[in-house]
Image 1 (cartoon, rainbow, N blue to C red):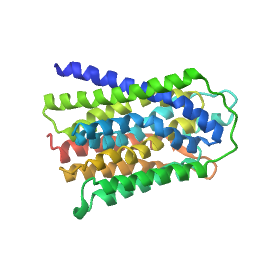
Image 2 (cartoon, rainbow, N blue to C red):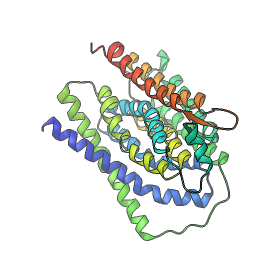
Image 3 (cartoon, rainbow, N blue to C red):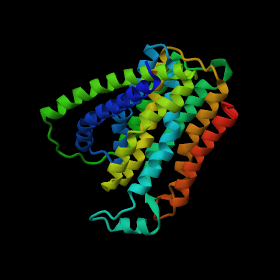
Image 4 (cartoon, rainbow, N blue to C red):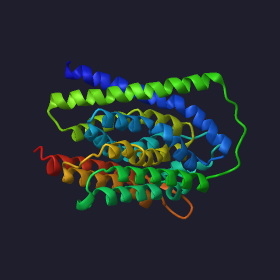
Length: 332
């Protein structure tokens, strides 16, 4: 089959998987309101669904014996997502919101203002998850993804979610459910499964046609395709006035990806064939939330990102691409 046809299938499959995730979001949003979770804690809870395409892709990769595609997807999506979504959120928030006079101050100071709770609830635990991945996979005696590593990371996810819920619990509200939402949720689950299968299948054929490794295909093909649909969600949520929820959800998504999406790859034992490529990518995975954590405190009164810090996020990703092209992959 022509490689361009597989590219089209890849795009359609990514759209289907994210459409499915959107359908599953509604019941979880109702649960979030019912349980009284704050924006940051709710982001960690909703990430169970918003990161489900990445998890489904890695389950499919493990089942089809192409786990390096899943490993590349795991790393690639976690590197590009934070600088991309923070940049999108910044530009989406450059308007005055109704009934929010305080936001005018953020516009005047060119700041993407966020709730400081997102650091303790999301970014610091996420950095801890990345450090745990490094400890489990980098040392030579136990290098690679082993079943015991998968169970440890599954426990890390449970701890991450429990911490977020406990830290961000408020009084719950009464909500109403309807049958349409339930049926759409079932359709969404099927769309995620079918979309994940064709994302992996398409990536297999594209990397074969281009004669590149599976992990590189996962990094720059699968990882990009699974992240791209999130642009529209982030833009929509932030433009609607939910700046913290729209911006910080990417941290929660990444935490789920590094734990739940890690699990199926570890169960089938995924070796690290190119150690340099792996540790360089893992280092940049850690750099993005580290920048987030360091930058989010503007002053004692205002928390968020200034315009120059948005540029630093983007420059960090460009630096990653340059390191990969010239020093790791040695394309030139």
